[in-house]
Image (cartoon, rainbow, N blue to C red; front, side, top):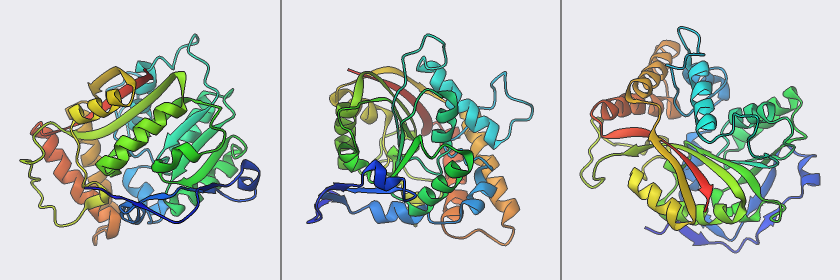
Length: 319
């Protein structure tokens, strides 16, 4: 199915000077994705409500609980941090002799948690770009970034991933790109275009870190234990690990590492912790996206136990 339509809107990108007078800049190309509005709808709720469900720091993409550095018991914030740190270690970005990181791109930056973590982890990096299509999330990002004093280093863009080729300074490549929990939102045609464009924007020795929930079964035969009455959190374009690897390699990336991470136990625990938070903080029932998340937690947990779904981590290198 083709979800891309041509718009008469002229491609545009606000300059960084303009961005500094606004919470975020806007980038919009001629191609538009008709699934964009559904994804935007999924993230319009108050971040304070989301934090009750997934933790104060808003780490969204699962967690690792068995890290020896984690306190006992590890909470959602700690487990989310440990998962991201594990991916950085796999990518070789946690060692003193690592490659220089001068520019970073977070595709689908959510509430900005990863960007702020990376701004502290790589203090010598003065260009961290985050793109998102949710104004609500971008406004929250901008507010927290200002409070943390990192607005001069973190540049926020209202930008569909389809338009990453229009982000400023094409001649300054990205050393690190993050795609965690975002590919699930991409229609197939958009995903394939985005990966081809990302390779052109990545430095010759650049790295891409990916995390997403993928299906280990024939998608035509998969049936959720919870009937799919709605498109929960805009994730209807289910994908398999083989498909992702194929797209990555056809786009010119080399798969440096591919593994199930977190493991089944940790992934299930994370989902049940989130579900428990929602039911505890909203005893009369959650609504909207948080109710979709609650149902999704239960459905995915069952699918993971049945080995129908796994959370996969990829580390890609420029091919």
